[in-house]
Amino acid sequence: MKPAASSSHLSLRRTRSQLLAIARATLMESIQQPIAFLLLYSAILTTLLVPVFQFHRFGEDGRLARDSGLSMMLLVGLVLAAGTAGYAVAQEIARGTAAAILGKPISRLTFILAKWLGCCGVLALFWSGLLAATLLAERGSSHAVLTEEAVGHLADSQTILLAVAAATLATLWAAVRHYLWRRRFGVTAFLGIIASQWLVVGLVGFFTRSGTLLIAQGTRWYNPELNLRLLPAAVLCLAALTIFAALATALATRLQTGAVLAIAFLVLLLGLTGDTFATHAAPLSLRGLVAGLMPDIQHFWMCDALANNGRIAWSYVFAAIAYAATSCTLFLTAGFLAFKERDLG
Image (cartoon, rainbow, N blue to C red):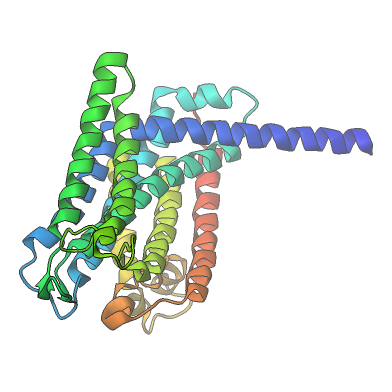
């Protein structure tokens, strides 16, 4: 029994190494693509500039910036998921790279799971950068203040300027590294922009909304004044993105990127109207079957729950994550079955 157990353990270790190696390669090659950098940069800049062009408060301080950031997180993340899956799966099949990889002792299940993990890694990095930008945009929005310095509504323009400047400097630094040392621009710019936003998140805690150093006031030396109530809503968006990553990976085994993106948007639309779509649907009808298999995206879009100082319970977030894991398992299983029968020759 010991040799069999040892052989099984070595096989498991080999599979895990293969899974991580392919996922890491997928992650690095995907963020190197120009589309990944453009989507991240445009999403962050759009989110940061929302407070600049906000002329009404819509009944709640910072709500427009918060909802806009979460919307960009979901919509642009969906596009990134489809693009990443299309590049990592569909294009590799078309170029013959997938056949070369599977020519080694690597199973098709390992290939599909690794591609999905790599896609999720790209989405997690994108989500992290946009979460930082959303926190900064919400702080930079006009808020009611009552201090010795100001009374009324005050916008923190300094935070917005710092965040935009940091993203721009990160891009310029990536260009300099590429020009002088031939470092990969896409990877440096993608990771640099994300790091720059979190750096600003750390720096703004030393200043008040009016730009005064906290330590100069003699009260406290650090207070970030960030709306952390949006963290559960952001985690729910990330869970939804993992579902779209699984769907896009499954579809990319048979379809090209454009078709994958179109179907993903259709699933998003039906998922956001899931209750209406499933109402009065017979259990054995086509509409009932589609409603049962379609992920209900309404479970992950909870912006309205944050209105008027509302909060989302973490117990609900964990339940939604379990639901997302079930949906991912369903889509990846379908993708594996479709990929298992495909001729790569």
